[in-house]
Length: 624
View 1: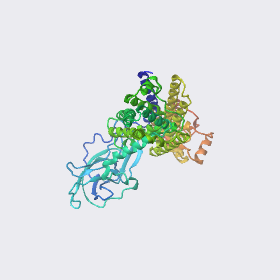
View 2 (view 1 turned 60 degrees about the vertical axis):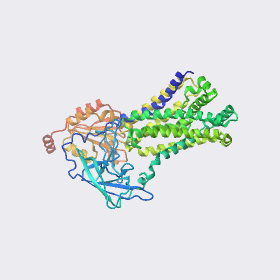
View 3 (view 1 turned 90 degrees about the vertical axis):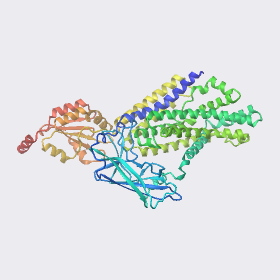
View 4 (view 1 turned 30 degrees about the vertical axis):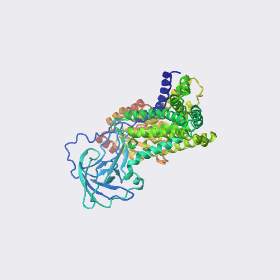
């Protein structure tokens, strides 16, 4: 097989993996993961910079043997206003409200060791008006932020101070006022940091954090060697090197180094791809974990980890690129010398993709939220970890007898790791806003079905059959994901719904109002379909406003005898049910049952007519 065919096969592999997850996240982004940026704060230059809307105080603590010095900044907010959180996220295009920023004064010798974090949790909600789909994080009344700091040599904590400023916006529901408040922090007792956050501030040894990351990467690489596709290869390859090198340890070690270099080259390509994806996600470099403030990203990560878990469980397998089975690859890997060993490293790593791919998938997703240097460090350390057995055996060939023997236990281990990934999916669900919980769950069922469909195609099948399986699976997953976020996520309500009650209905009718009552429930998918495509529409809203129609929502999600009785009075025993009561109480109620269309709703409203004006309604009421 030629190199061009290898490129084509690799491209198909990459395209499939990206398509399967991207179609889900694209569907999630399209529905309610839209624009939410700094529009409330624009054009407010005429306001004062504070006007005592926010007062700021600060203090710091001295370092101890186990913890660095901490700087605490407290903002007291006028009732009715709020500040956006310091970790307020934004959409992929940068849109979003301005987060609160705390900065030290220029020339301040004190050095920040980490980001400011809040003690009091912000109130959160998902916006559906301006920055649709973005989680908004707001602080009311009072909030304290803290960050670790490094005090300079000779710093006299008892008499010195730390100067800085708090920059942000004090907002209400209608407008925002820019604020920029200076503070001076003096030595104090500090505040109690929540235990869930206490481990977050870096210690004075935080400069070693990258070494910790590299250590975890090496451990992860070692684990890859226990995968069923990889472990049987280790002994064979090392023995082949020993045979080629004769009794010369230097020769064996040199071949192992070349082999490891080939293995590492694959991981560096993966790191480059990860950095490229990161640049595609945003023009800026996201901070540590900052992408997890974006709902669409959390949904996408959940989809990715879930699909990898299904691979571990044997539902489907990541296909081996065609190059791995080609005569070109076999010829290159069979060549003697360092070049042959280097190609063998590439060849073996590609052969390992059906088992190592599910492990590397979450790693790839994780590094999207990291700086480029960390991305290369993670992938490089994983490659080093995977290379370690070869390097050690190259130096000490007798160690080959210590390798575990291949057997059924390897498949059991892979399945157990699949359950670990499913546990990760549960955790990721806990980070997703409840408004998108059900849609994400339905999307995962779509992915499950797609992976099952792809897994049914035999590994020995022709390329055309495999491609058809991938395309069909991806299309079904995309359709289910699209429908899930279309039907199961909250949309902006165009109609001014009020809760239904017999009293509210009677009062509206007594005032001569035309009334539209939607009998619905969360467990009724047809109800949601009617609301989405037939009722909650701009054309219906225009008629409702023009005719002064009162709209009541009768939510039957839980047991409610009052709503049940109202449904039965309309000669029905089930929902969906849309009832339109004309302003003239002598006329019959118009009832639309089951699946309805927008034109039916508009025709019924037109037939019911507008509400009576107050004077006419009063005269009619007196006659009665």
